[in-house]
Image (cartoon, rainbow, N blue to C red):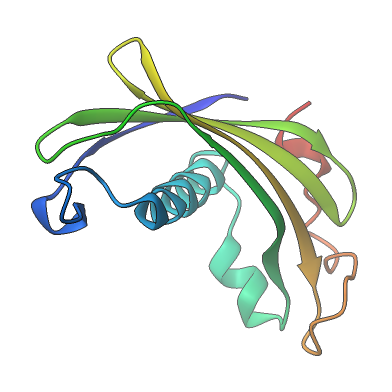
Length: 130
């Protein structure tokens, strides 16, 4: 499943050079992954209520071109690999057809103590994509 989310750049996300600060892209990617889970009918908040969560274990971003205040962007999120307790997303940030940034994100499920763990019954992630 590929999910596409629109987003407009807000002025306060820009740095003194006038473009979106590199760290803001991490927020964009996080928001898009949450929206991906929502679109896939995955109840992440219910997972958290059971004492588990999904955390990012690795984040690789290739910045290609800057975004500016007022730009209308789209963020594509697609699972590359999904196992029982971990996986990879590929995410692409575009302005129109122009790629601004590409990311690979490794996630894993952790228990209350922050240790990698399979999610509880009913919260399997292997059905979310490839």
